[in-house]
Length: 113
Length: 112
Image (cartoon, rainbow over all chains, first blue to last red; front, side):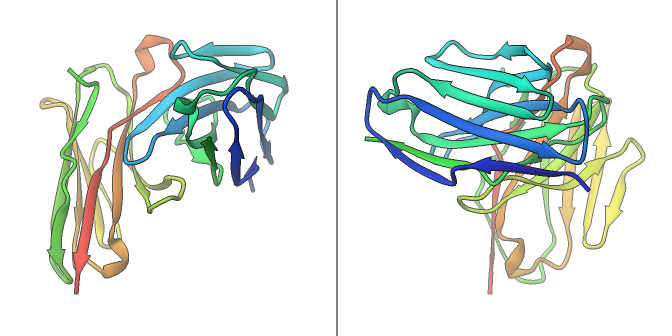
């Protein structure tokens, strides 16, 4: 069966510090990978998605970046965090077929202070 | 206009009640549809896919109306444990964008 791991679960970082969140998927190959953010009390905002190694699509301009160095690894980064980067970050995967649902990791709750 | 719209609620219903949520989508070429459930401070979890002919899973029934561009979720015999936010999700496969679009969610509170 497929599993998705995301870490850390919680993170408190000062403004201006760097960020690295990692996500890995097991039990499948060539998944589509996604990073979403959810602000408190709000809906899910798609940040990045990837359909293959080194292929990253960005949905919104921001000070975040994503990378996919390996088939089942997806990394979200920032060089300098802003207060507005606080939120609940969710990694997800799905098969590449159009009718496949998304499967989420447990999420990382980031607080920028 | 939002691509996927949901009534945010909250829907406050007593235990045992039947409750229904609708979700409208703007892209008529959308190909696949899902309902997710999200508990407070947790990740969304797949509740059920929505098939063209409608489908049922226990107390939950999902339906798709392509002509009017909406999907619905019906919950029968509500339990306290059904209290959560229900997210409607649409796959707009004609855009080349390999991502799903989420509604903002409908909050359900089942009361004893």
